[in-house]
Figure 1 (cartoon, rainbow over the protein chains, first blue to last red):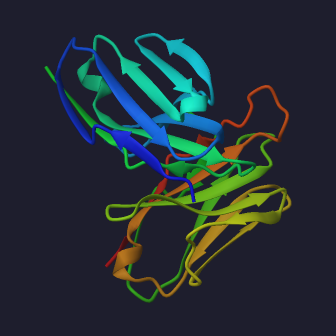
Figure 2 (cartoon, chains in turn green, red; figure 1 turned 180 degrees about the horizontal axis):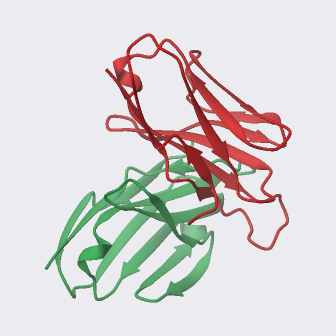
Length: 109
Length: 116
């Protein structure tokens, strides 16, 4: 099956700093989503981005489908950004998502 | 709020028992997915239903089963529970193909299962 690799596995930032999270995938995809899992376990949709670039406030994402990677940018990080960020993809004609192992982000005050 | 509703939010049960987790998808969504998140296995796809029919199967144990009812809600049945089944179980739903929202999959808040 498709492989999804996220880096870095852990990231510690000072409040106000910027960061870039990366997701590499091993095959062509029809869906790519970024999620934020907060400390209460909720999975929050950040972006649906199988290709192109999107922005939502301090967050933006870019997917280069031909090169099989996606990037999530977090600017001016806040303590509430802490949690685990997951990249998930659907390969080929499948609709179910395959998740990466996540990036654990900790933002210090 | 994603619009996907899961009950119960928390459940503690003993080994060997059987539990049922319930999911109501977003209004109008025909696809329902079940995922398991455990510390050692990460987030794993279990099974997908589309309009009442099983569409795809992932790493679902034989002790687990699911169904989707005519009103589109779904239930995940976990039987002969073991300590290792302790996990966060997510339900998700997605719109029918061709809709403007594309293939976006929306997750519920999850059901925390603890087997003691």
